Length: 138
Image 1 (cartoon, rainbow, N blue to C red):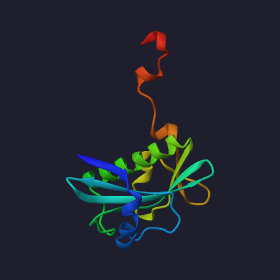
Image 2 (cartoon, helix red, strand yellow):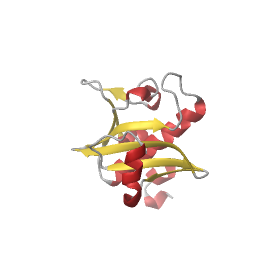
Image 3 (spheres, rainbow, N blue to C red):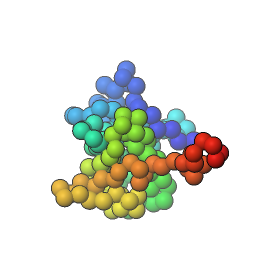
Image 4 (cartoon, rainbow, N blue to C red):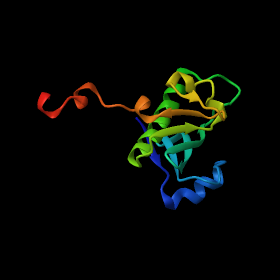
């Protein structure tokens, strides 16, 4: 099973030494499967949005196209970032990671006027049909 969790504060220094993490971040997440890191990303909070500054799949060459398994891992990490944004009442998610540019439109991200891919959270995370019904209808 894949888990995507924030890198604990006590491990952050070691993590930053072994990964090219951007300087300005609010949180760093690591994706792990079977005790092995398979990817990571860093985010920073800005007014009314969360920015995915960097996202990397461990051992992936940027030159080759992503396969279906890699797309699944990226989507899981993006949805984890969206959950982080939702918990902070940030209505928009942005992604600055250039290596994902060809995949982001598949997830309904759109390029804004300054060339950054963005998506309103309600397009990425939404309640299931039963959760949207008024309580007396359930």
